[in-house]
Image 1 (cartoon, rainbow over the protein chains, first blue to last red):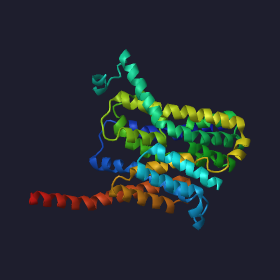
Image 2 (cartoon, helix red, strand yellow):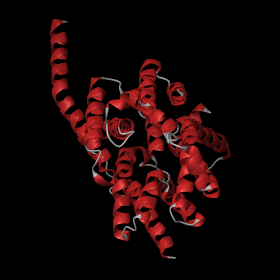
Image 3 (spheres, helix red, strand yellow):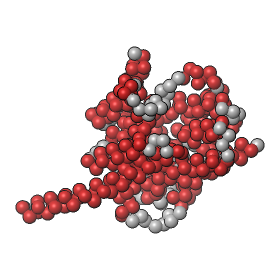
Length: 104
Length: 262
């Protein structure tokens, strides 16, 4: 039974941080400085999520990373996207590269 | 049709709107579809890991459906195996949710005029992928409430349904799935995020933000509770603020020069 209560509490802790910013001080517009910061946030979050995920494929960073399929296919996806600007094309080709490298 | 779409708010429930709603909903589903495909194998693993780490099938499913976060699922399994105390588990969940809070704050102005009931549903449905497709879709224009809320619902509802269904499959198949899957099931999702990262690089300032955020997150990788992501984000934004403080001065001077010359 206990575990169900814990799951319910986890649900509350997962929900409130997503929801509260929309209802607390909801009427007030944000100052331009804050808005400027918020506009830069998405790029910063993606970078902070992606960079470690790609670099720490193994527990430690070493030269073998340069031959790791996960890392190489990520670099390929990145380059493809810079070049083509097409999300689905780049990521599917990236996955294809990953699968091919894994088979080698 | 166009005059209807141009109105700032058309949530009055006229029959004509149902078509419009459906269109926005499907737009959301469509924008989310690559993420759904990538999430399915991960959700199956999450389901299988739940039952192999000591939860019952029902508990695993409830955790998936109520937390609506893959990261929280994986971390909770780990902590339950280490028999961490409730306080530690809940504090960890709150810390992991800091990222969601950042998303929520960023989206604030885009949901301000949406009704309280909708906000409840939308808050629950907020996840990484949804945040990014929503920001991308509505970044420069003022879209009507209907478009924003139904697009959001389509995106979050579709991946929520797929994640839940795939979790059930994972629970049913159990440990056999873990042996079969091996490493790299998360690569499709990583590839999507890598591609989105590349698409953020629109100017020098963006390169500056992304490099600082990425490097900081790498250096802070060993920080507990996924705080490295938060540190990286803060550092990236700080770099962006400094960049715009230094560079626009130059730009302004250039403009003044141009005006003088002409």
